[in-house]
Length: 450
Ligand code: NDP
Ligand code: 2IT
Image 1 (cartoon, helix red, strand yellow):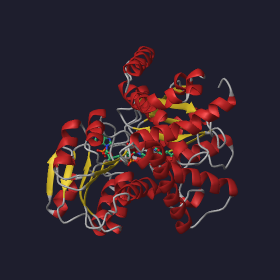
Image 2: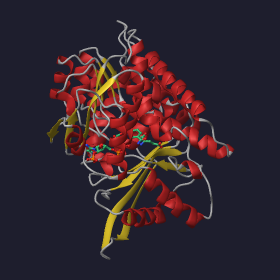
Image 3: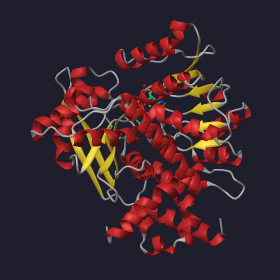
């Protein structure tokens, strides 16, 4: 990076931070992208003249609202709801809803920003958005979750629509929540449309959507491995998280002949040296999706190690799939992972590696697939769900899985096209950021002052 351009980045970031204070995750996500784009923008001045960067970091619209609801004790509760409509240059706003007590404006802006590039990479016509609430579903009854979802949608419905903005799930929002949200939208609008994705199969959902993010993350890793004539077969794999993404990553790794030895939640991690086979995975799914309990119960049931308040990155494995949350893998852990022989990291979560961890992976020239490329399979199959809803037909598992694999391969190709360095090393971070940017930026150029 030249001296002048690093001054340019610093000035740009200083203004962004001043204008968007107290949003460290948003600053982090933008900084990574502007670093990747730096020399590309110098070589392509049309984007600079049109102030694309200045526009792309500014959400088209932010909606914030009160969500009042009544708990099982009859007490009045109130949470804050959000929808960030980030960019609609290439399609309707598209992206998940997160329900978690840590949710705030900055976190949702980082997620919406990343979503714009991710959705562009999928090849499908989807803009970027994200939303959610600081509501904590943990320990709430089904009825409380339903009343919350109904109240949330009672405000959100007026801002979304199948051709406007199509939300889906994320942390704390799965099939149960999408069902409640969809039911309320339908009641208010008297319309049966594909306004949400991740719906149940009986009412417009797509096969493979629950599996798509985890499967896609593994398919992306498989593509990266194949550049070195390598595969999952016989590999030891570390997975973090134990929710939707982690569960189906474990399923696909096992199917491809790898052995997953860790899972985690916000309380700690389990280490099972024998591997989490399909029977044990069934138990994890029951534990997390039905009983909604802690991963520690896995260790109790199978008599394996449980480490409280720690993350799994100190264990040994050739491949790591972070599938929990942002900034869950720091520099110290990245160093430890590589020292222990890890040479492939594919991010199922959004921005799970800190900037210092990413830099370490790049310095060590390992295979590193950033979230906006590696976890795009989820939103890609959401896009396929929208297509099926528009056509009023349902594709088979084989058809959707095949399309998902083609899309993940195409994302890998795009990263290779824009991220291959002079020495042949593929920097997937640069590749995903530049590759995701071009289609959105060119569309903004075509559309004028938007
Ligand atoms: P789930 O709610 O199903 O699972 C989340 C998992 O991550 C749980 O195990 C949870 O543990 C853990 N977790 C959440 N927050 C924290 C935290 N602060 N510290 C430690 N662990 C935490 O969510 P998903 O599996 O859907 O999402 C996981 C990641 O994947 C997120 O980053 C999400 O943005 C990303 N993603 C999801 C997609 C999807 O289609 N669902 C698509 C693309 C990306 P606990 O139970 O203790 O909270
Ligand atoms: O981060 C993500 O890509 C998601 N949570 C999925 C979004 C979607 O619209 O399916």
